[in-house]
Length: 352
Image 1 (cartoon, rainbow, N blue to C red):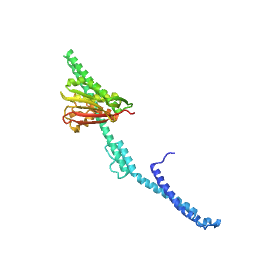
Image 2 (cartoon, helix red, strand yellow):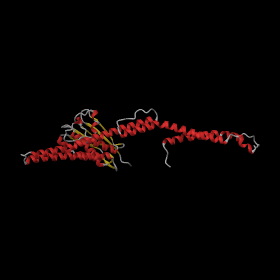
Image 3 (spheres, one colour):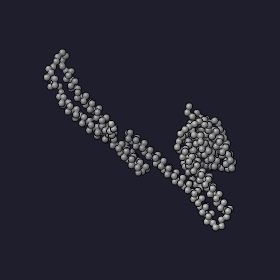
Image 4 (cartoon, rainbow, N blue to C red):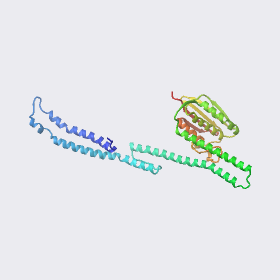
């Protein structure tokens, strides 16, 4: 059978014990009459009904008790559930119309705690939806910008009646460069999406080997920018998706090299911890206000909100956070007083 409503269940929960207690109290006179005869004596059979309480009266009183118990239980249950019904109705309206609203103060006790929990949930949902809207808007802008530039270059080249092979070749080269920028952005978006999906299968790996490959792959760019990259790579066993972790370390090194100064320095180190492996990347560079560090881990955010840099889209540290979160890794970042960032990611070890 289908379970009744919560109010019905509470009504029965209140009414049944009340009715049982009343029935037990009413049965006491019968027990007293049956035990009041002297020992060794017998009462006439015809007087057994007339000497005790009336059975019919007992049934009527018990029925009245049942009605009173059910009515009172129904009223009490309704009063107790009134705040819950108000919370449900308001929460349904908030979820359907406006996440900015809150349940507010609903009194004391468990219902107030439930309202506070739902308000916290609505606040997180609102922040998540706002973040998603900003991400979509920024992604659309970043994807549209190179397309607009490519179309403009081609239209100008085609509209020039004095265009030569050299000018057309230069226009094509610029279009190719913009296409490469767009390809990097799409790859970064795909990596970010993969990192946010989580890790389905974990395998053991050494963070030192991953970091060594990332440093070697970025050595030429660092030399071209005049940045010295140093490594202190001790064995650091960890568990997770090695390809995603490689993207994390690569983005950390990329960020440290690109946002540096000529003659600057980057240090990449790994170490074993009691619960897994740790990778740390710190770099010199421009001074980062401490209050800006958290913002830099949001998608499409750059220091100083400079959207004109040709060497990045503001996704590197967002990818780092997404991959770290998917692995259950502890991510910490701080601004160095002399300039640059100091970032650590601690990965859990493989399960035995």
